[in-house]
Amino acid sequence: MKGNKLKILIVGGGGREHSLAWKIAQSPLVEKVFCAPGNPGIAQVAECIDISAEDIGALYNFAFKHHIDLTVVGPEDPLSAGVVDKFEKGGLKIFGPSKRAAMIEGSKSFAKNIMRKHGIPTADFKVFDEPSMAKKYVSSLGTPVVIKADGLTRGKGTYVCKTEEDAFQKVDLILRDKFFREAGDHIVVEEYLTGEEVSILALTDGKTIVPLESVQDHKTAYDGDKGPNTGGMGAYSPVPIINRELYYRIEREILVPIVHAMKKENSPYKGVLYAGLMITSEGPKVLEFNARFGDPETQALIMRLKCDLVPLLYATVEESLDKSASGGLDWDERASVCVVMASKGYPEKYEKWKEIHGLESQKGQDDVQIFHAGTTLKHGKIVTDGGRVLGVTALGKDIREAQKRAYEVIRQISFDGAFFRTDIGAKAFA
Ligand code: AMP
Ligand code: GLY
Image (cartoon, rainbow, N blue to C red; front, top):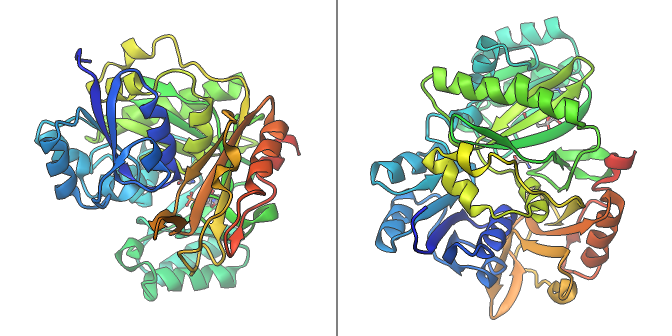
């Protein structure tokens, strides 16, 4: 890293980006943090600029003009659209995988085929573009069975089907009725796995792999894992079932082979690789890879990361992680719980611009942060502007205490139509 202090640009405007901006702004190496487009919470720690996360040309021009030393990309869309390739071609440093490597998230069939070819444990599957063949395979697998749209669907393109009838309907919905447009030109039909779900994210520069602590998302909208799948309603870290042995097994059987495989397949991977796993009776198997930091998982992880994130991001880009992270990362021993407050109707239609009250209720408590996800300013007031509105994230000596703290703060925050799950973290002590 050069001697001068760094100017950092964060791309995105959700809870994940707020937690990243909050952490990065604390780094003694950093002069200034910008965020495009950001949100009112992020504006407390960074300068928000009015550029959409998808406007790659405008992001590049801004970074070039303002001599940004490092750009950090939050969401998947700009990665899949090639923001990293554009910046690198222009000689600008950017944290994230190339367009080709981001296909590990952008195309489920790409990811599954690489896993099969390189012996990385995952559910049995076949890829289809034609409904009748897909249905034959569904019948041969039996139920439950899992149907996934191939492309990016914001977490909505996966269906766990309990009956054959339901599975046939989903096949038709995606392939025949084009519900997800071209993201559903192909589907993956896969074997249903049972076990405990866990996510392991790892920084990698393509040579060195630095896994982060374990974290668990809560994908469905309502308590008890009921309701439709969402982007994630809450997360906690660490996950008790991930003992040292399992952690190393995941590193050895999944993370190391996939990073090697990506290199062999002409798609060297740099950035953060997110492995969504099912811990089955046969061992860990991959449900999906994401090419970015998870949201809300990152909010829970960032609260526990004690060391400076900036040298790690920089070293990932510079391919020198072997030097920067050789001693491992420094984690808070305490647990964290992030509870998402959402707008009524999410993940389907919801209303916007409801005034949010009680945002000051965490003041003076260092171990609780209110990360903004879907908020905006209207007439000087902070109002809702998305499905997921806030991520209230707390530390505690164990999951139970972190959970208690998060819910204490959440119950002091209100807006019209607010809802949240009341069981985030409960699985950790079930
Ligand atoms: P994905 O879009 O692949 O992340 O899947 C979303 C959710 O669907 C996962 O978090 C799991 O809860 C569930 N899921 C996906 N694939 C499978 C599978 N093969 N077996 C059981 N559940 C699955
Ligand atoms: N919370 C799931 C994700 O970020 O993909």
